[in-house]
Length: 216
Ligand code: DX5
Ligand code: ZN
Image 1 (cartoon, rainbow, N blue to C red):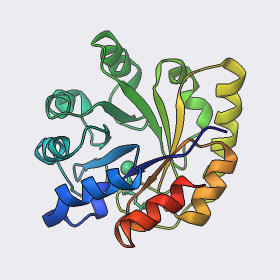
Image 2: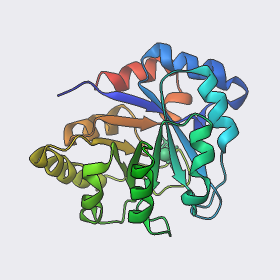
Image 3: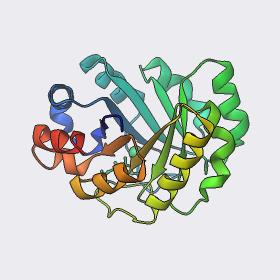
Image 4: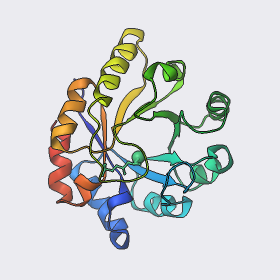
């Protein structure tokens, strides 16, 4: 099995220390960064916009993934790309014609992945897997960090792992929500390659927690 990629979600970082904490994550072996964008409509929380993305961009050369938990990614995606985002993560549950929007991203050569909520059937997104760089399986209901890992999301990871392997697709499986050393191990065993983590990393010693997750 390939090595584990850790994608710290800066939602739980100390924003006054954002640049230093991003650099600390990179030194500890993070492989990318995860930026949770919430608009107060698609989820019941409001977080960051493009300005914070460009601040993180100035602190690291690692891949930046923007997890767009917003109702209208079609209206705002360009400002995230302009701010330095590398990969847009788009929810299947977004209330726009997701298929058309993903096709538009493809036509514009914008790197992207698809995200699926805990209650959505994994088969619903199969048609988007061949053209996705990442498939992100939510293991909590989106909106907040610090929630408990939903175990049944592991079944989805297993099913998707099989689907990707059987068809030789290049999409990477990422998991997001409630990831710590125990749940991260279960997710890895189920076939996830990228672990997103916010509170476990930033509410503990950053270096230690990233190293622990990376060793899984
Ligand atoms: C939830 C976000 C997650 C969250 C993870 O809506 O998408 O990325 O920040 O936080 P932890 O790792 O604390 O569950
Ligand atoms: Zn996220």
